[in-house]
Length: 314
Ligand code: GFB
Image 1 (cartoon, rainbow, N blue to C red):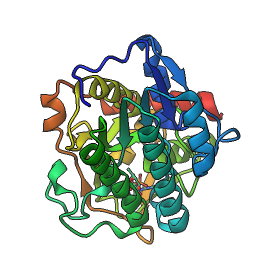
Image 2: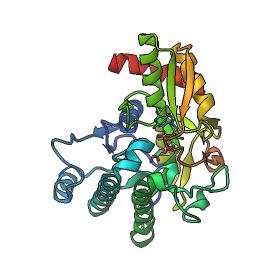
Image 3: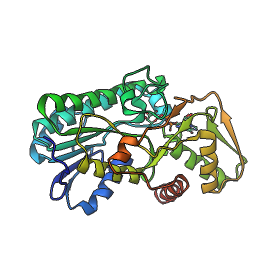
């Protein structure tokens, strides 16, 4: 059961989802922690395959697990690939949480998402808003799968005394993001679109929706730092939000990205595209009381993300 602070040093640490943006940041941040890092490629173990996951866990027996493997995407992907989003995320969470339990993992962190909270939750959103109202329809399948993972962690904690914890990151961006034109999140989508418009000398860039929704954006390396901090210093059944505590309208955010990229043309809005939830600002009081705050400012973080995009994709 719980030991605080929890010692990471010398442990075998499995990062599930290491090829994704979050898993990549976690593996970078774990380098100085003196751990034995375990990762597995999808070609070796498909995390949706329960027998393969069980075999891998029985062989490797990781002491610590970061569950950062998930099928993710922006509002377009969530809204269209509804079956894949619920199935993949339910089964990945179920397989890994159960295998970690059966094989005696000392600690597990499950990464959820701010979209688990009700569409119209009071802002900023406190952790106890979970299951107090209707979800945002565009990402309901993803949110339901994540809520199932959260509840599984809570149930294993309660029945078996497992030191399993739940953290809820806000909207993330940074190196290793997915820049798919239809399926990416807004940050990657706008970095790519403004960059391509600048290179092509285009006079107009279209941003989805009305521009009025508000979002909070956290640089992924800050998230990884928070996850290491919480793994060491937190053990309770309650969720912990991870964010910056600040938000911005999509219209203003588009202007920030345009300025960082160096695009000077017109910005217009396509109101036929979904806005999603009107506002999603995390209450980060619990995290602050646990001794952690985000340090990357939005403009600086977007510049780092743009540089990563130029390195990775141009
Ligand atoms: O990042 P995003 O897809 O995620 O969209 P959500 C955020 C906002 O940006 C929405 C607007 O209001 C979009 O309408 N937006 C403007 C764009 N232009 C674009 C664009 O080109 N691409 C995209 N994708 N959006 C996600 C959930 O919701 O939040 C996921 O769907 C996940 O499940 C993630 O939980 C954290 O914030 O709307």
